[in-house]
Length: 310
Ligand code: NCD
Image (cartoon, rainbow, N blue to C red):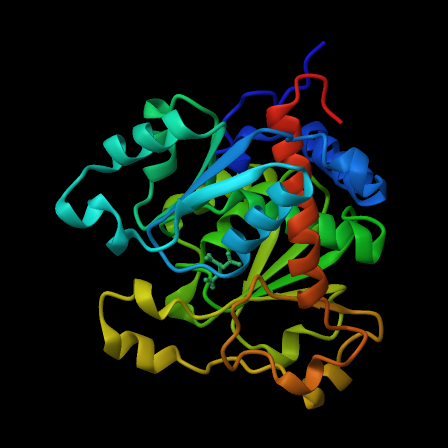
């Protein structure tokens, strides 16, 4: 019997149910425990093709490192201005060409809907590595994996999501994903950066959450604090950005008011929203999160590429 991810696109976490998440988490545990020689058989002779139309550090590098750890190779375009997109080639043609040269295609693009569209023209499974302000499904997978690993569970936890909830695509994927668990979610943002109302209808169907603006007042009972960067590049009006820039800063003083065993997460890159002074505390989990990202992506690639799974 083939595993449910075999040769499938990964476009949105809205296509996932709890079993699917658990399947990837189990596979992630397995690839971490596997001996490297065994792990290198999972994508031997296979090629990952990546197309990044927006900047990336972790997502692209962790996909490449993941593919290498499975014995495969990666080819790609890290900066679309160096590709024929610059000459006016369409996204459809660029994706189609990449899918002729690779076994799985990884796409990051500034447009909402780009991944769904690309999956239709791709000859190979397509993985969304960030589509506009809409979604970043592999980030949500590694985010949930991190919570499960660091707190031992997801159900029953009080999770605060802080920052730019309007434009942060990691937030949307995380909220859709949390809808499969019994978590208690508090959304903390400036009023102008609340979760977009076109998405709340769908989120509310599966997830109970409350909204707040004051960070200090709303931190004391949280088990997980997920901080996000204000997405400057997505603002149509820079004056609006200036108004909210630097709204929230998590430093040692605020940490003292929080639960001793709170975990602090961030998809990264961070600007000034988490003080570097927190990096050496046991609460800071954002670097662990980035580390798990490689293994979670390796597990996902292994599932997509191997009919029998891992
Ligand atoms: C995020 C993204 O690209 O959405 N980065 C990432 O992949 N970890 C978050 C961000 O850019 O703020």
